[in-house]
Amino acid sequence: MKGEKLRGGRWQAYVVSAALVLCGGMYAVEPSAATFAESKTLALQIALDRRGFSCNAIDGQWGRKSQVALATYCAVHGYAVPPTPEIAHDILFPRERNLFRVETVTQREHDALVRIPFTPEGKASLKTMGYETIMEMYAERGHLTEGALRRLNPAVAWPNPPVGTRVKIPDFLYGQDVRLRASVLRVTLSRFEVTVFDEKGRLIALFPCSIAAEKAKLPSEGELQVTTIIPHPDYTYTPDRVTKGGRIVRRIFPPGPNNPVGSSWMGLTLPGYGIHGTPKPETIGCAESHGCFRLANWNAVRLRKMCETGTSVVVEK
Image 1 (cartoon, rainbow, N blue to C red):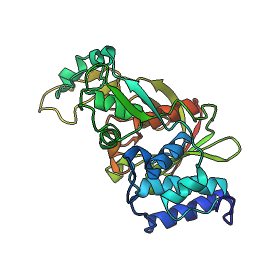
Image 2: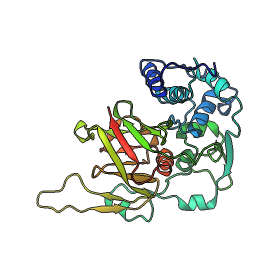
Image 3: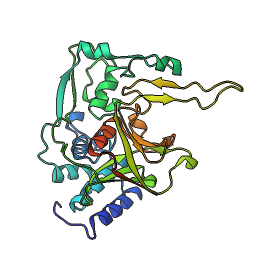
Image 4: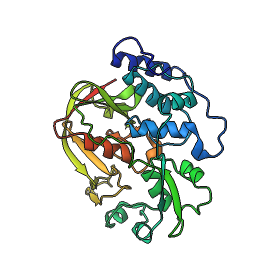
C-alpha cells in the first residue's frame, strides 16, 4: 500500500480524497484493544497530529475529522488511503516512537487554577483566565478530549487529582517539525478547515476550524493578510445589547487559555476578524463563532508559530 501513488496533482488528490470522506467514507471504531493506550486508532491520531494533520481533539474514536486528516496526509505524500485506521497505522507509522509521556501533578499547577466568573465584570477582575481544573490543563497539554484523558488514566481522581499524581498524556515534545513556515493559508468554509502551504506550494498542515454561525458575518471569498500576531492575547468584551439610554461599557478580559480568543491571536486585514484559539476545543468544526476562524488552542499556537505578518490568507467556499 505504501508508495502506491494517486493520480493527478497533490491538491487534486487531496480534493478527491476529502470528497470521498465527506460522502460517507467513515470507518468503524476499533473493536477492541488490550487497553485504550494500545489502541492503533489513538496512535494514528497522535502520529498525524505530530505531523500537522490534526483531527482536532484526540479521542481514540474514528470520525470525519480523523478521516479528513488521514486522507489529506495520504494525498500530500501520494499514498492511497488505507481501508481502516488500524491498517493505516501499520502501513504509515509502524515504528512511531514515544507516543506518551508521564507527568506528575505539582503544587504549582494546583495553585495556578482559577474559577472563571460568569459575569463580564468578574472575568475582567481576574489576573489571568487560566485553567479551572487539572483535567482541563492536562487534556489541552495532550491535545485530548477530557473523556480520552480519563480513559488513558482510569485510576486518577479527576478532575483535580492531588499533588504527586502521575498522568499519562500523548507526547508532543517528540516528533514535531518546528521549522515549517507558512506562505499561504487557505480557509475553506464548507469544510471547516485551514490548510497551510509553504513557499513552494506544498501542503504542510491541516487544522479543523469553526466559522461564523451567521452567514452575514462570513467574510467574502478572496485574499487577506495576517496583520498582527499576538501570543497570550487579552480580549475586549463589548456587550451585544445595552439598556435604552445606557452607555456601552467595554471590559478587558486578561490573557489565559480560558480567554474567549484562547492562547493565540492573528489579526487579519479585514477589521475585526482573526484566527484564534478557544477554551472549548471539542466544539471546533462547525458554524458557531461570532465571525472569526477559531481553532483548538494547541493548533492556534502551532499555526501562529508558522506564520508572520504579511502571510496570505485565502478564504474560499
